Image (cartoon, rainbow, N blue to C red):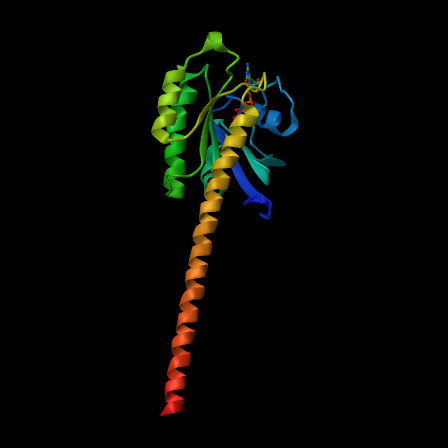
Length: 212
Ligand SMILES: Nc1nc2c(ncn2[C@@H]2O[C@H](COP(=O)(O)OP(=O)(O)OP(=O)(O)O)[C@@H](O)[C@H]2O)c(=O)[nH]1
Ligand SMILES: [Mg+2]
């Protein structure tokens, strides 16, 4: 028997990777898209990557926007936030300030989108630097529960939880898209039903006129 999603078209989503400068946004993206590790640090202005993945048997095209964490380049943030279907909020487990910055980012996303349920995944990167940990796992999990957004401790260096974090975000975006699609279909079905009822009423009126 074909699965519920067998005939669904390929979905396309905009993913925005946000977080403070130097936390590893570009490295996580490069590992996910190209399977490559970048040792050097070259602050991003803006990069975008297009990639296709399969999530639970469904094809998904992702347009990933790797944004600038450095203050001088952040003017474009509002625009990114308007166009994203899902957001990866990245901090480094070795930097407390990078963790604290996530709050402002999330507040801005929710203010701009006016939507508390927008797909978000929180990533604590540089998990390989356990000896430099400055953010307790428990603190990050508490934030994750408060926001109702999953938390992954990841390492772009060791490629730990990179695919998992992106895939989780994809699942959230697919779920959201499905429920919006269902809502759209319900509205269309309701409209068709209203139209049919109107036609029936009109026909009845016409029939009555003929008798008169
Ligand atoms: N040990 C370790 N270093 C990492 C990891 N991810 C990134 N780095 C290093 O951290 C530095 C910054 O990484 P980027 O990916 O360029 O950081 P970014 O968040 O894109 O920075 P901006 O573009 O300035 O916002 C680089 O030197 C990386 O090699 C990681 O998981 N572990
Ligand atoms: Mg970067």
